[in-house]
Image 1: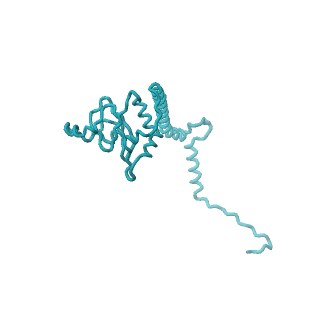
Image 2: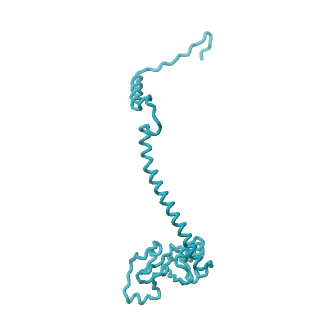
Image 3: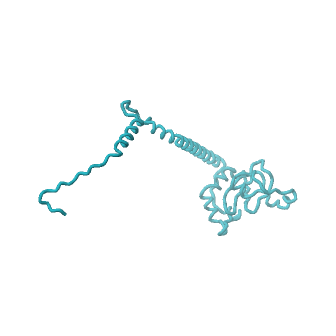
Length: 210
């Protein structure tokens, strides 16, 4: 039996409940076939997944919706891109039912959402361009991850160089930091017992004493 997690995680291999042949025949009205779309329609709604051509036969539970398209009219990939489009998802949310637990409207209601359906050649071109943009976004994300990793590795290295004085060119005549610290420590120790001398204010002749 296909469950909501199969649609949410887009993974048809996840399975917890299995039916024998007699139970499958009893629930045949809810059977899905390879190439069908399954959609989560309770709680987390609107997640879609397409069953592969090698998908195991089964039925959907009450938290899923089955959508079967005419591939002579619409490309499966185009349909999925359309279904996942933000404006289409917003239209689905407008038609949800329930308050505490939202439920997607029936298929017949979803069918009433108006969409533009170009010819199959134009669908192919739209798919090609969208896939190219997705690939570009994936490359940017990968480069960002690499840059972040490089920054994470670079920061400790920079700190170590800073403490060694390797960030800027050094003057050989400069006093080593270790020697400077020893000298300052010695000066502090020498002055530890010194008593500070306060200057006394001189009284001017005839000046009143407060």
